[in-house]
Image (cartoon, rainbow, N blue to C red):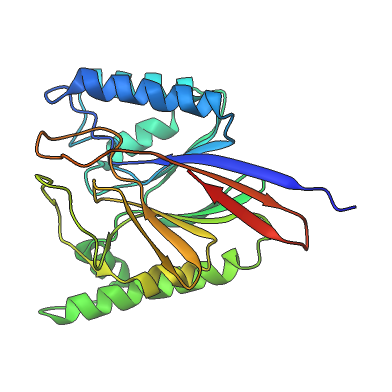
Length: 260
């Protein structure tokens, strides 16, 4: 008989550790997330980015470090538009029992049997710089979006070869997403479609950037905004959440996934 394999994770994002705004509430909720990770005995915690609200302060860095080292399992972060390069570098240097994996561009990270394609915030300017050629006017939107499609398509071909759970973790603005009341959107918005994220060939897509939880199914693929785990602004009135997903599968057999 084939052996059934299990993999589960918690997904969250848009943390916005900010000592000047609801800092006690932020830390309390993140302690709850950590407690849930232990209670559910998940294999990993995933974040779609925006750990900080801006360039971090020492108190904010200490709070984040305490949370991450207390999770007691691997942590994967896709850099958000609020995250600063220096803060991401510091995260990867934390002394932790389990790996803290930070993606500032795009790449596949393996955690146990899972392959996680992490894609950082894809703004127009960074993609134009990556292309190494001048692009001006309205053409930048089409060029940048096609460049992002090519990234997802190329990594999707690699992901499709993986036998275990395949996850896309991304900080992005998806067409049709409804923003939270009172949520300011910072940065140059490069919008992508559900058909674009489907190029990843993932079993599940975890998104952040929009603070209001919402989800779709595209071609059988669940696409989920986790939303922020707490009300980062008083104008946010919707219920908050984190995502818990469990994969059960047999090698060369059926693949099943449950979410809560």
